Image (cartoon, rainbow over all chains, first blue to last red; front, top):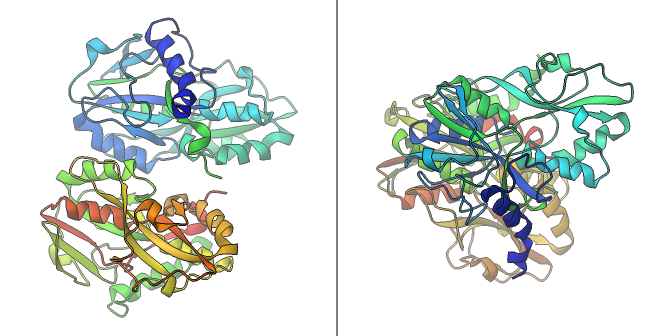
Length: 260
Length: 260
């Protein structure tokens, strides 16, 4: 009974999404629950994609891989339906964005495998709990020039999230995120964006980037958009993902998946 | 140059094993380097086995999965050869132990995939560094009654290592091992063996088990023999593993893979 109650915020949020009541960002919904990025592919690409995730765990921490053809994530959110329970999807055909529906039931195939990949949204909530402000003005998704480890068709450079953090909170931000092993873990870089070839000119997500204010330090984490970008670059026939920042809310407590 | 020097103890140990000079336990060789359990399977079982490891990460923390047909672990020990660089192998045919060679070059097939799985030997060394004695008299591999998550053919109960630790070191042992996320991490249970259905009558490895001395507490960790047992139970045609406690020594520093 306690167990049932404890997952109620996640279930309520998914119910609002499924009914069409909530179709915008999942950021801020069901605080404390692990949010996931989604990649859906046909079985013929599943081994290579699973291997890509294994070889690039910091960018692609796998929370769950579903059984072929089954849209229910039995381990992380029994009862949920990955075809309806995300606020918005991206449909890619041969690597190109073809549609952005709020429901993918009509597209579902019996050979689909869904990969749920831990999202950094999860630790933004932990930042707030320890008093680190993560203002949307100072948070971006960027391309870097750091290569990932190839697996079959899947390859490409690491996508990163950049956050500008007050100098005196850099250590705390490193410590807090390092505990979230299944949500990208500690930063991959602190300081000069050029060291990792971060592309400040063309943010994938976030506002135009101006000069760094004197009191802030750039910090960089591996981003769950990395495997999505790799799958896009592979130009496979059909792939479905979450729309950026429109994630899947699991029943898992972020603190449960933490390291001490 | 510093980098080259730093992996020299691992390379020397593998060289002694490859030449046939060392054919016994790998325990104690190249302290500080990550040691791995090995499972080699044909490609047709690789997806299910990879998924089994993903679903049971504490028992099966993957350090590396090789390219099909390639016996060199390019990421964790470039230059090594998984057909010769373990002190002893177990060859299973339809789930039954058929041979225990020290070299598997004649058995190698072009469709083989090798899985390197982090071993608890790695953190026994960390125990010693913090002053926790891990006496071979008080260390076992046991069957438990805790089910693992199935993936395809692969399923079975969790195999555990049991160590009897002085009461006043239980907290320290929990803390130290929790850092080794890629070598089974923190304990799965502390205390009464019956809680996890540990089979004290039939240890898979270790001496006969007598009564627990008053000053010691049983502690249990997920064991890398779990996936090997699952693959045996699946009765696949041909599987090759390391012989128990005859592991593969990587170039990776255990402390590098640690969480803070």
